[in-house]
Image (cartoon, rainbow, N blue to C red; front, side, top):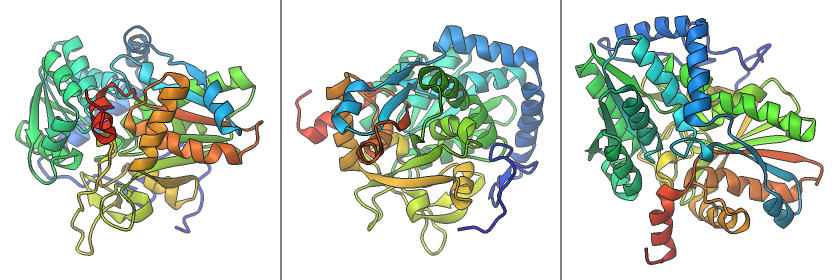
Length: 406
C-alpha cells in the first residue's frame, strides 16, 4: 500500500493538475491540450454558475426523472438471511441507466462552449444511447464510436442510437471493444478540434473529465445518503457498486467517502478468472500506467503494452479504471474485488426471479458481491448497492449463454 499521508477529506481532489495522489493528470497530444484547457476553464466557470446548476437540476427532475428511488429488496434480503439490502435504482432513469446524469451535464458544457458536433465512445451502449438522447434533445449531430464486438452483442442499444439520429461507427481495431472505441473517438477529436465536443462516458480520461463526470454522477450518492437517513435514520454499513471505468461507482461512493463508518466496495470484472488474461480486473490484477490521457491502474504486459481483457459485460470490458478509484485503492479508503462471469450471471437470474427486476450485467457483478457478503452480516446491518442499469440490452447475451431460444 502507498504510504501517502491521508488527506483531511477524501472528497477534496483532484489537485490543480488534475491528480489524485500519483494518478490522473493530463497525458494528451499537443493538439488536444488547448481544448482540454478550454474545457477546464469553462468547467470552473460552470461549477460557480447558479444558472448552470439550476438548468442541470431542472433537466434532472423533468427529463431524467430524478430523484431515482431507494428500494428495500425485501425478498432478496429474506432469501440471503443477513444484512438489509437497499438498491439505488438508477435503472429507472430515462434511457435506463446512470449514464444520462453525466450526458445531460456534458451537453450543457458543449452548449456553453459553442460546440456543434458531439462525439462519444460506448461499450455496453448505454452511454451511446444517453449521448444520442441528449444530442437529439438539444438538436446536435452525434457520432458514436463502438467496438465491432460490442455492436454485435448490444444490438438493441445500437438500434436505439440509430433511432435517436446518431451515427454509430463500428471499430474493428484490437478486440473491437470499449478501449478501441475510445481510441477512435480521440482520433476524431484531434481531427475536428474546432466544432467538436467529446462526451467521455466514464470517470477516466485527461483532467478535467474524471472530476467533471464524478461531479455529475455524485447526484446518485447525494440522493442515496438523504434517502437512507430518511428510511433508516442512519447511513449504510457498506456501499457497493460495479466498476469498469468507474462513473456509477464514484457517483455513489463520493458523498460517503468522509463517513468513516461506511465501507466502500468496488466490484471489478473477474471474467473467466484472474489466472489468465480473460478478465478486466485492473486494480486487482493490474499495475499503474498511462492510457487515454491519465495515469491509473491498467491491464498491461511487462513492456507497458495494453492487454485486451474480457468480461461477459460490455460495459466493464475496459482494461483500465478511473484515476480516483486507483487513488482510493492505494490509500485504503475503498476495497476492490473481482466477480467472475458465472457469478454475475447467477446474480442476474437471482434478482430477476426474486424481485422482478432485470438488472444489466454490469450491476449484476455488484449484486454477486452483495449475495456473498449479506449472509455474513447481521440483520441489523445495511448494504446499499447502486443498481446502475437495466438489463433489456443484455437479454440476448444471457439467452445465448443459457441456451434459450429468443
